[in-house]
Amino acid sequence: MGHKNTIFLALIIVLITNEGMAEQHAVGGSQGWDASTDFKSWVSGQTFNVGDQLVFKYSSGLHSVVELGSESEYKNCDVGNAVNSMSSGNDVVKLNKPGTRYFACGTLGHCGQGMKVKITTVSGTSSSSSSSSSSPTSSSASHCFTSLLLIVASFIASLLTQF
Ligand SMILES: [Cu+2]
Image (tube, rainbow, N blue to C red; front, top):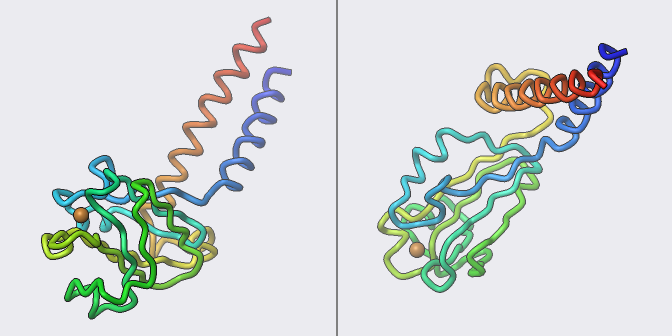
């Protein structure tokens, strides 16, 4: 009986976690969208899949987020032809297709100080079947998360069966 419960709960949790695979990436990690954040090293630790979201967190008024249309605009911090600009301080960008997107701060001088980030989104479907070549970090992270939930589920199940 208790064993059945555990398996049942585990199955449900696996289904839920697979369903909610889309991730939210807080840009810059705990430091957020700030002039002092090292965005290059932050990006190198991330895998962006189609369906994921970027969240830019910062003090509204101090910074902004502008999306640039090309690599050269990104390199030169040319924010004059922005594709999109946001300034709420909690700006969400959905990565809805594979490819590279460029974001910079619109505040004068900040982009030149390194407040810019280049996001390369990969096709989410390939990561579930043959991810070993392209994105080992993301799959191991989600596996880790799933097993953690499994442990919690079996713990709950074992508590339930004591009554
Ligand atoms: Cu800024």
